[in-house]
Image (cartoon, rainbow, N blue to C red; front, side):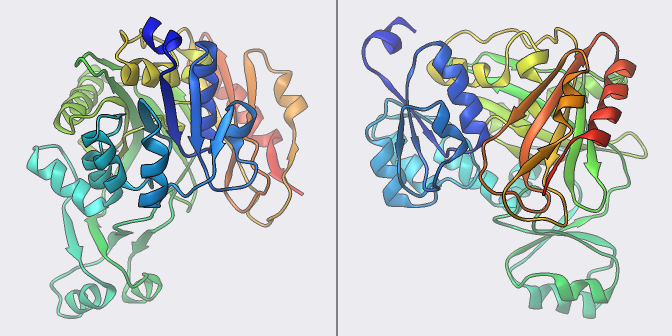
Length: 384
């Protein structure tokens, strides 16, 4: 830490969205020299980052040029050019996640293959190179519906995920590389955030229960810790630890899980970076996920993951019938609730279901937090 603070070492964040912003906020508490690569005008990170280098996070050349000037490099998005990260790592830049890890994460089919190879629980899956081959498989009765169909690349926040219950539903599937999964009878959805340091230290946050926005494959709100059978909790934590080691990942890794009607656990997907399902750790945990990520990347001892209280988060999503300048409503009513904090990301434009901020509330009991979440969901919104 002394060397990083006193020798002019630089930390680069590839991406300037809300996750980069919150990572930079924690970095500022240690007066770290932080730079960001970001191509959009007025990104959320601008208010807390001294140097923003214009450039695309998906461009090999831009990421390479930016990263060469850094001592430590990390990302706030899964879409970063992975080949550039691999080259930077080879040149001596301490790069987390590794490019090889990010390449696996960026392709849902490669994710599934990796999990299968490492004996990690996943739904049964099939891979199709394009829409035509998928439809042919259905026509020839080799593929039975219903199924969950996902685009292998470029899907996030529910985008690129389709429920195909009949032949007609196949018409809406895009013509691209596709992953087809068995439909899990979902009882509950969870997230586990695990962190691994560059010296191999591993820590896990308590499981987070996710509550989805209806028909959107998008998290509406979540709470942690939750009432959960000890056997299931331990199983998810062991899977998370096995996955972070198998990926040779350093930093935060968020794993989303399905729990089916028979209490069987399946991995849904994972992300090798701070994650939206970890926002509650800012107010609710002894060490936030953002500080943990910095500790891991910089080779420092990990902090404790214990919760100080029960915490819940409501995502502030754009109204479904509006695009344009964001106007937040109901925040004053929400701030009247004890233990409630509002986080506005600073995005200039809202659109349907876009994440524009979140509201965290903490309390001594889960029932208390859930009651406050009910009020926040009723009062808060982003629209005209």
